Image (cartoon, rainbow, N blue to C red; front, side, top):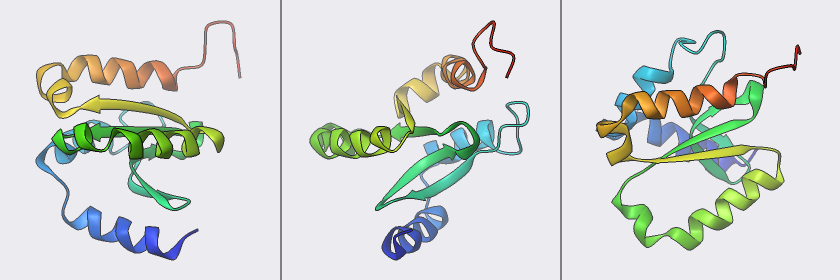
Amino acid sequence: MHRASTLKARQLRRVSTPYERVLWKLLRDRQFDEFKFRRQQPIGRYVADFACVGVMLVVELDGRIHDEQQEYDAVRDQFLQDNGWKVLRFSNRDLMSHPEGVWLAIEAHLTPPIGNEN
């Protein structure tokens, strides 16, 4: 694990945005059955907003700054995907106007496909 990303993750946990706090309330305490999410999870040289290690799922919450860093986000997402992670991105606006849709989208990636008993 990269030491710099671990230090950055600790700092980000202390200064989360209001939107991150709203999403964390939805994800924390194993509210999706027994799936555990971590916030500000270091993965390689990056820090994921939220991650469920058990199913290799990253959930990113994008504010306005992401409009200006689309290339960086694409490189970062590719790194995560190349390392086996599925990346879901939601805007702050999505979260606040359609929290149930965000919940259902995340839940869909945690549920094994029908017919898969594993």
